[in-house]
Length: 128
Length: 82
Image (cartoon, rainbow over the protein chains, first blue to last red):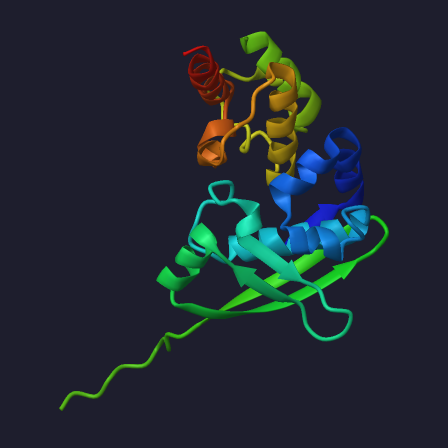
């Protein structure tokens, strides 16, 4: 889970503009956020990226944030597309899919990501 | 260089404590820096020192302390000078 203050995103856009967008978001995400002008939607993307990274066996900060691309369709569930080190970490952990939930107010954006693995825990194979 | 780094940290890292009270090796994340603040810190350092961090340096370890930032900047500036 992660929560992001929308004002923080507005500050970053004002201070760093295009450079901030290019270092954090994919081109598709920028396009999806009003060409990078919709701070609340950007905050939602950021929260989902962070929540996804927290679900992986990897140190946050060691992964390029653009390796987690967030899709927020107008209707239907949000989805994630992983690449690079994030995809490697997910594959290594046996994660096969993610369940994503997001929400936002004027001030805050939140995201919850549940990583779903392929391994069944708690069951033992019968001998013989 | 160290004082300039500390000034940028004070302005952008949003620590829960005064950076002047931290050792050079103190963990900035443990002092309250979020990953979003670390992005701002990186961009502000690029402005301050007129450099660009390459992708290979976009790691937690590079931005986790005054000392680690200084080491990265020294590496980058020496590459430029060479």
